[in-house]
Image (cartoon, rainbow, N blue to C red; front, side, top):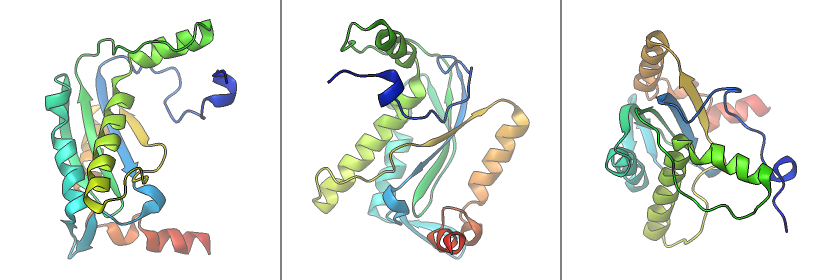
Length: 188
C-alpha cells in the first residue's frame, strides 16, 4: 500500500505558512484519550497528581535532558490534559530515512524532519503512555488523544497571558472546556 499525501495526511492544525523548523515558543495541550481523568483531581483549586500524573510531570520535566535546545516554561498537569510552554532555541535536522522514492512524499518528510515540536510531543506521548501502561499492566492501550493543540507564541504579551492561563487553570477547572462536566453540558 502506497502513502498518499492527499489521502493519508490528516488535516493540519498548524499555523499556515509558519516555518516550524525555526526557533520559537509554543503553547501545547495534550489530552488524555476520551478525556479520561487519569492524571489526578482538582481539590480546593489545586491539582493533586495521581501516579499517572506524576509520570506525565516527570516526562515533561525531563525534556531538556533529551532535547538540549529546548527550554521549558509554565506547565500544569490537569485531570485529563496537560498544558505547557516549550521554547525551542535552535533547530537542526532530525534524521530519519525516507520510506519511498516518491518526490512528494520525500519533500513532505524533509519539511517534517526539521520540525522539532512534533518530535517532542511524540516523545512525551510515547513515554508517558508506555510508563502508564507498564504501571497498570495494559500494554498498547492508548493513553492520549490522537492529535494535540499547539499555538505559536508570537510576542511577550501573548506569552504572559498564556503563563497566567496555565497558572490559573486548576482554580478555573469548574469552567474549563476540558472538564467532562462541561463537555456533557455542551452536548445536551
